[in-house]
Length: 511
Ligand code: FES
Ligand code: FES
Image (cartoon, rainbow, N blue to C red; front, side, top):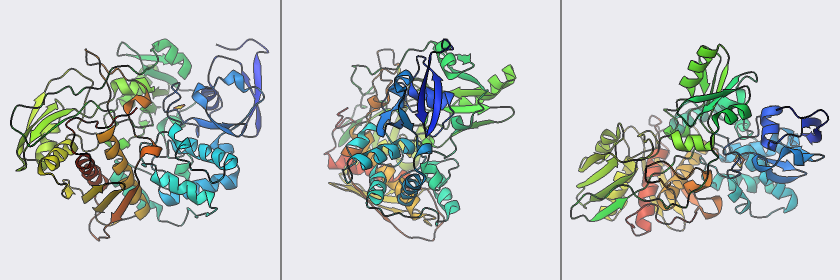
């Protein structure tokens, strides 16, 4: 709805005076949708919980998706694109040199938070302020290393590595094609929604299972009439019972959300849609590209498809819950929510476990999220044995882990290709495993519908509660294979053992 004539505000964005309608929309909408500044990301708007949309308002970090645009009259807004070029380069190079940016979706907001902290409280520990942010890839440690490097004035040039080799290692670890280089830290990693044509029709999921269309994102979301996502008061509960038997060890898990930060997005100006993959397999079956193509063909217009956080949480596949019992000799029974491919995946690593697929009311599941079923089976067997042995996954590397004050990891996965990237993915996998075992779960209601629709309700462990991770990489000339999935499994088993194998995951949920 256009604002009445004269009902405008003026503000400064990245050094330029801007006039905008004084409408009822957020600063994020103004920056991203009206001004086309794609360095500012949307991971959960309007929840204000992921930090991806963080910008500087008169020099202070603020999440743009919960900031009304009309209150910004006369204020000075700085996005990463408008940061002093020397500072922007220092941050980008430091993030690249330490491996602090994998997909890079969270990074522009994090850099602006760190920049604000550095100006106001030089030398302050960034762990607390970083709790305003979520990063699903890196596991925080490398971000803290990058912050320290910039704070100490140690400008590490980012352009001297073989970024083709780095991208190859990233693709092996993350799944799908990946890019590497300082530009990734600036939010320029090639996200599908960032390059959607400005004149594209926008399509969003509608509550009836169809798609709502609009000329703008706001119009499409209004047409969809979808309710805002909220967090429930329900407690996550394991939906499956442990199969009967006399077991040395039992384990029950809940539904858990892959929680990738970049939401499902695609756009299509026929014939071929563009979409972003990765997310350690969690977005492998997103319907966004096929829908963009179909709607573009039907309407004869470019179409941009975009999920909101509640859409991704309701519609995206979950890691299937399990309930199992096992003995030290490797025998046991594992009930798993019925999921295509899960029986074969578990049988390949744990032939002594009988897998019982079980129909259970709940959200869609997939065997695609990182080591789904495999991690739970191998952790259960490690718990039954009372020791975490080396993990070797089919077609992948070998990893061992020990969890104490520090998470110590050793991995052998062939030629390094790029040590920074490999270390980064191993640290990220260690964090993801620690977080899954101790904290991650979502509640469902009696009908099996997901009840927790906010990004903070998934239980991802924040920066300030993540143990340091020490990674030792075996230098080898072998064919490069995935190493971080084995690290993920090894750290999960070692974490559970370190906690004394409580029978239900998550073991220590605090949020
Ligand atoms: S998009 Fe604003 S905090 Fe997540
Ligand atoms: S690098 Fe942080 S979410 Fe991917």
